[in-house]
Image (cartoon, rainbow, N blue to C red; front, side, top):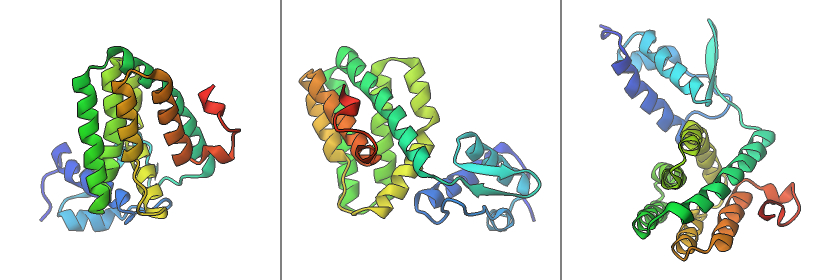
Amino acid sequence: MKQENGNNLSEPVYNHLVEMLLTQKLKPGDRIPESKLADQFGISRTPIREALRRLASEGVIKIYPNRFAEVMTVDNDFIIQLGQARIAIDTMLTKLCIYYGSNADFEGLRRMAKVCTEATKTKDYILRTKTDMDFHLQLAHISRNQFLIKYQTEISLRVKLLVAWKYLQIDKGYDSSLSHLALVDALEERDEIKAIKIAVNHLVDFYGLDSHFPAGFFEK
């Protein structure tokens, strides 16, 4: 027998779908199995569709009304443009973090980077992906800029999925937390030029922008 509908029932469905996306059990272009999810959770399709609408608002699935929902595809243009936007944002975040950040703030960032490193060693790719983006979200909070916090929060899930897909396609030894740790060192030293260079090069490398733009393009 189906449970009563309600937003509270959509939450576990949402979390389940996010985990499937992060582990590539659902890949770009895959259709979301609504009926299977309804049977799995013992609920009607109403909370299933509520979870899907939430994911659609976060830009990771596309809903075709009265037909189906599918995972958004990620093409090269999307990756390049997201990388460009993140460089612009993180460059300003780095400046603001040096201006507003305390040593306690930076120590918190260091702990997050270390968690990411440990997750890499234990091959906990979901934790590594989450901590990777949480690190950048925390930079936004340290910046005290509400617009940058809002922007980072809105793109958080899209970035997490891209990070997860990228991690699963490249050498498992890749560890973004090494760049994060170097960035924390530069922030603690209040070395703006060094910090921006680390932040920019980290994103240029991750998003493959060096093959589309001349060397040093984003550092100017």
